[in-house]
Image 1 (cartoon, helix red, strand yellow):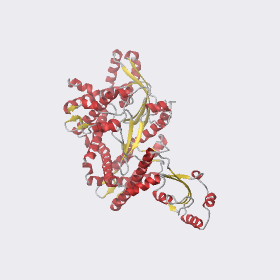
Image 2 (tube, rainbow, N blue to C red):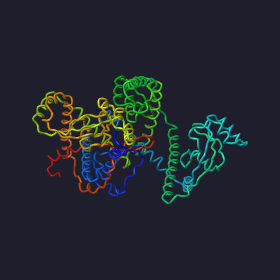
Image 3 (spheres, rainbow, N blue to C red):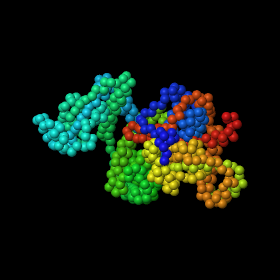
Image 4 (cartoon, rainbow, N blue to C red):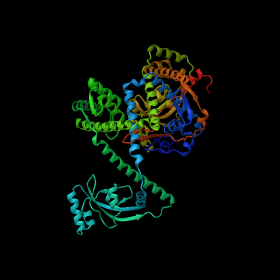
Length: 622
């Protein structure tokens, strides 16, 4: 089993934040300085640094190769922009699936901008509030409580206490939960605010009035309190900052609830009942199949994936175009709604029709809320604000580039004649072949990537996790191990593995099958004469995949090189050298306003081979 120390050395750090703070010196550079200039777009220092810092990258932990890694990343980023330009030229935005996928993400960004305008910008801390919060943060209370679901019973107990009954006697006569074997410790922020306000003015030895929560009714008795008087300046400042953060979160929650209630007071939307139940029927059938033939994500939870959507739409036939959701100004078909479910995620823990109908009903409610909030953001013109436009454009480039790349790959065909010629050429060729052996865990979602990386961080065995979670069953049966294969195979997996150090773990690699977490077990170089023609013949399907990858690589390299020659005006390599970066490999989630989660930046994998092709065209390149 891998030791925890080794796992931590080679593992990507998973971070989930609302706001991200990098070392200050990284952003002392001019953010608007232009690294690369194209005909109608640029790559700024700001975009480069942000994306570099929040993108996992092979060999990132090796400090002395910073310059090499920065150049690799810039070349990959340039290729993304060029393919996006080309996608725009050939009007790839006419694709139904691309439009919906990209539009869903754009709406999330617009909702986030609305949240920042209507909620975050209105958070104001009054001096008295802040001082009160800091004062509370210096006091720890120790208390016990009596709980009951029945209001009549709790008020009867309260009356008895007022008439002289002993709290301890009543407390001891009731079933005591494990968390009350000793008084519970209460610090600022650990209870809901209404409870906290009462407890902090209750003298030790006294009890509170009945306090109502969503769970039931409580009477607390404060046994004792402790003032944290032994704090040094640093500890006090840390505690004050924590108290300020809690206070801001509480104000934010109040503003959110007020805005949400007012905004939706006059909004209307509905689902067509007949269409809804048609969808429930087909969804139930699909999830019954998944429960019987697939493994859950976690805790018996199954999530909808692209293959499910294809199967559901095939089952529905023309009904997939029926209007499911009706709003005041627009309607949405089943197909449009299903793609939103794919984007946001839809999971069930039960394959019964009742459970799925309940989950689908909640998903439709959330869909209506999201659409109305996005509509309000667009109405206010928030999508036109410079920082929002920049965010949207960054993701648009990624989506267009990725979509065209997949389209190019899917259109490549390999004939049997090409395979036969390849086998013959290999038998007389002296070309060296780089072979790698990896373990892989292939999963459906980034949530699952997060789960597995956390388990690896805790010291779980990679092979055991592969057996338990990986979708690639033939490899999962062997602890996720592939066996040796040329790095020209398996798309980004092969290319990424070639760049890793032995023992290094890398994630996520997005492929047409899902998200891969890989660990490099070994790497070696062989010549064709060490592999017999007979063996190649037995690997016809693998050779077809390898040739398809090679043809794709060649076509993409030539295309990107020609696009570079046509569209790139300048690359400022001296500016690139001056940029300071960290060597911390991070995979970062960004939480967005009004509910939503996305990667902090689009995740790209190394792609630099196009540059050598460009050098053949442009002899002046370094």
